[in-house]
Image: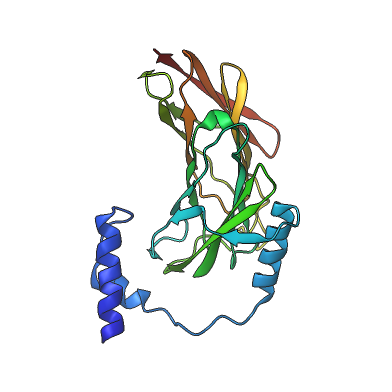
Length: 163
Length: 106
């Protein structure tokens, strides 16, 4: 009972932010997706390998990267993601790139965004496809070689990779 | 390719951070879908988006099939001088579509 109430609360608070239209009771029911822990999977290993490649081997630290995502995506074909990185974006100190990964997609890589100080601010908004409920990771590479990451779990009710 | 849109504020003050919004109509065929014959439909996506500001590359994106169809993309740009922002979309066959917009910076 309480879990369902919380799910409804999440649904309402996210819809206030306007991420998606309220889907009503049906979506809440559908959103009570199995919360069984994911098997430490080939998917996770593949994603971590892709992340290592994106950072040139630098270990990712937490912080500086924030992701705005829906908690539940009713349409896995269009999941809006906003990524912001805390950085002065000067020649001396800026974000070089940000990469997005969706762990449970057929291929974990989604996009890499390449910034210059001319951007003034490291922020992007893009729509991604998610095949199913998955961890989503944003990784930022800084001009000093350091790397940071942010992770979110996004529940998907109808998958969107077309497979 | 297909129709594209680019939105940039018409005016800005020097030093302002503006938002550039882009949209292009494209199936972004993932390569995962199966056709009526049961065979996978080959991948065909926009693989790169590059933005220039008065000719200098300021931002770019490399895309994989996990980007949604009819991809929307927005990013930030520091307004430094009047001129043109251009966005080029390149697909897997290296076909390019471009759109440009002018901005007056005072």
